[in-house]
Length: 327
Image 1 (cartoon, one colour):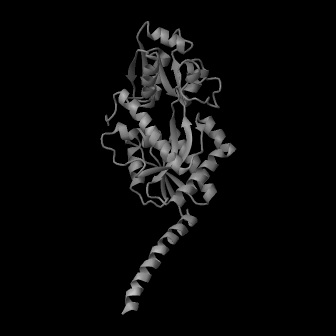
Image 2 (image 1 turned 60 degrees about the horizontal axis):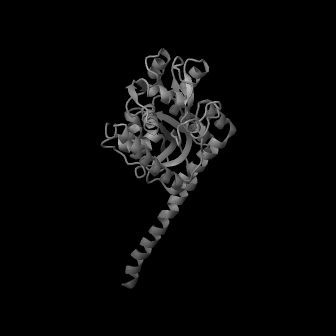
Image 3 (image 1 turned 90 degrees about the vertical axis):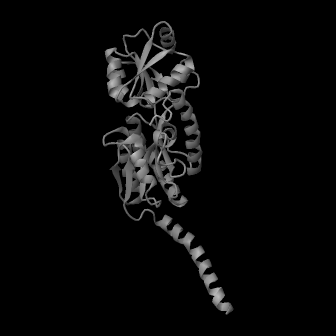
C-alpha cells in the first residue's frame, strides 16, 4: 500500500526535475532550425536594412537561417503583436524600435501588447541620431542665432507627422530654450525636408541619414545633432548639448526583441550573438555608413531597466506634445 503511494510522488519529482533539463537542452541546441526575424516596416527603410544585416550575421554565427519577414503597419504594432503572440522559444524574434518598446505605451490608448511583459529586449544594436537643419537663406548659423530670430518673428518647424521623432525633438527644443515655434506636420520625412529646402518652413529635426547628403550639398544648414555623442559619419556636426542646448541628449534606438516568456538561456545567447556582431569591424562600418551610432551592449536585465527608464522619459515628451493616447 505504501509503495503505491510512493510511486506517484517519485514520478512527480522526476517530472519536475526533468522539465528544467529539457528546457536547458533546448537552449543549448538553439537554434536548431530556421528563425523568423520580423521587421515591423516595409522593405527598403533603415530598420529593414539593419534587420537584414543583423539577420545575416546571426545566420553566419549560428549556422541556421534567420529569415526577415516584413510586417509593416500601425507604428510597428502589427509586427510587435505577431511576435508577442508567437511561441516563446526564440524562433520568432523582431527588430524593435524605441517606438515599439518605449513610446507606444503612451501614444496608444489601448496597446495590444505590453513591453517588458509580452515583449522584452534581447539586445541593443544602435542609436539613431537626429540633426537640426534650417533653410540656408535663414540668417541663422548657430543655436543662439536661432533663439534670437525665433523671438523676433514666428518660425515653423516640420515633422513626419504628429508624434514622430521630428515632432518630439522640436517640442523638446521649444521647451528647453523657451523658443516659440509652430509645428507643421507632413506625411513623412522627405516632404518636410523638401519644404525646408524650398523655404516653405524654416527648420526641422531630421533623421541624419536623409539629411546628411543635403547638408553636404548646401541645400540645408546643420546646427547640431541631438545625441551627446558625435556621429562617426559626420564628426563635424557638434552635439546640440555642446552648442547652446544644455543636457540635450535624445535619440531613437534599434534593438532585437523576443516574446516575454522566452527562456533566459536563449535570450542570453541572442544577446551575446547580436552584440558580438555589432562589434565586428565590417558591421560597425556599415552601421556608421547608414548614419547609426553602434551600441551593442547591455545584459537583458540592464536592457529591461533601460526600457523602463526610456518609457518614463518619452511619456513626458508625448504628453507635452499633446499626442499621448492619440492612437
